[in-house]
Length: 67
Image (tube, rainbow, N blue to C red; front, top):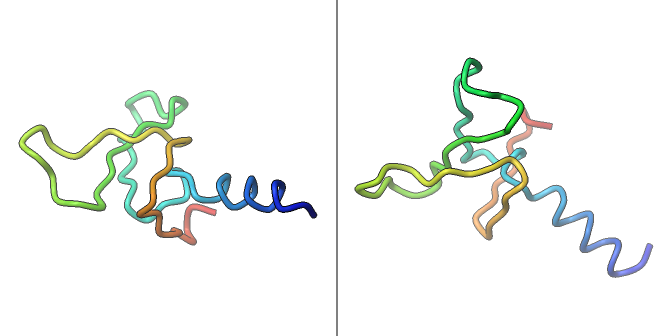
């Protein structure tokens, strides 16, 4: 496996959809879109930031239940 393939696999696994900090939207709110809120840091005056399932950041922590 090349270095490029390895880094691609690592990035694909570290997306919001597998992150412990993602609080998903209620089931009745368009679940197919894959939107949630990132609860990694305290909320701002505007609330928690919106996160899409395919977003990523440097604070990812794997949620084993999401796999």
